[in-house]
Amino acid sequence: MDIRRATDADIPQVLDLLVQVCNVHADGRPDLFVRDTTKYTADELSQIFRDDSTPVFVAVEPADANDPDARERVLGYAFCIYQDWNGNNATGIRTLYVDDICVDESARGKHVGTSLYNHVIDFARREGFHNVTLNVWSCNPGALKFYEAMGMKPQKIGMETIL
Image (cartoon, rainbow, N blue to C red; front, side, top):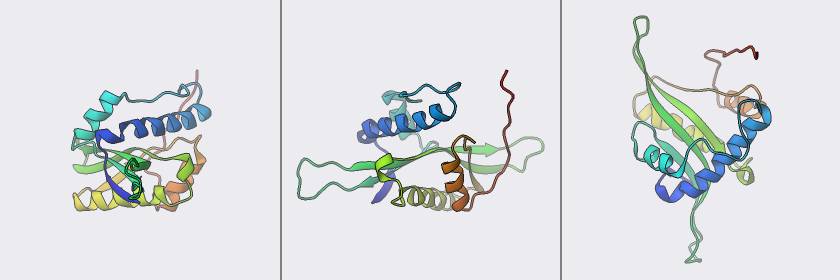
């Protein structure tokens, strides 16, 4: 498995993974998410992939060298966003926010998520970020358990009242 920046050639497979993520969220919060959709179009993904302030990393299984028609298979992705934490009462740190991590359903349990997460952490260290943050939905206990196993700690807790 290799991890690299996403390219336009990855868009069809990334779109498939975005549907998987959407369905996890729709199963947990059908009042907020619609099944079988994506939060980005192919054109939006192309723009995101080209923007250095929104790096997207993909874990890929290399193509079979013996098959001239074979292509890399995207096993998972990590969408990241550069954030500056500024304000009158803030210390002015740079944060790498992980907007989304997904591992293809068929590749789960094979350490793809761990490899992606570690790649993001290494990238953030090399680039001089203060921290790496993300949000996890309470309706996704598997993701929460994964992030805790990676050593993440709660930073803040979002709460709601549904009316």
